[in-house]
Image (tube, rainbow, N blue to C red; front, side, top):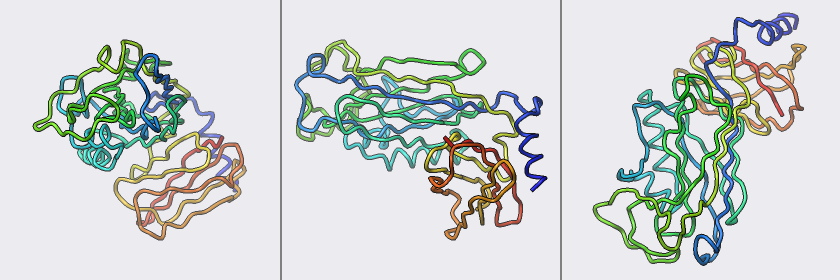
Length: 300
């Protein structure tokens, strides 16, 4: 128990550990989609899940004037994210992206979608996000490769006005137009000032820095990553090289408070942490090859 307590103090208070390598951001999409600015609403106006990726400059997932991929087409037309997630996973495998970002949907025209505690590595500082305005032919809001280190250091806060884009995959002219695929696809264009939209934004994206983590907060044996951190109810753990056999949680006094056995041999784990109270914990990840490491986790 003493060793764990000493390790916690070392991680928390050793100033040599805190070089700028990974930042934790909160991302909030605020929708102000309304009939006065954006045309008479369809039945059941809503937004699909806000999905995305953080990546490097070697890859572009969508851009104004570019042709939509199958993943972007599926998001913009159907609010279905499987193909886009597969594109992200391919980029992760190729070393060009860090993680797939799986945000919530919004069941109403106005309101917020929040992605909290998003860990962004310095190696993958570009943020791309997309959500379907629904129902619609192929309309979406999106940001492409927002650089969170444009000035060479982590941005403290960004507020981006959002306008609707046409994915160029369906020729429908209003919210309830029947399916009318465009073959071949045409470039992605802005619908600002194009009916049913006027030139007013449909929302904002606010990206706020919460903390910067040092090397020993995030670099781990076998490239193990915890997300989100801070966490609230669910902790995701991913590994690149070997799967984990067990994950053990200790409080700051070194007392074991929770353990999780990985019976599926998966490299992607989702662990319910609702039983943990607010505070700092040490997470010991034990790999199948016998190696292990300890990371700090903040539970809100």
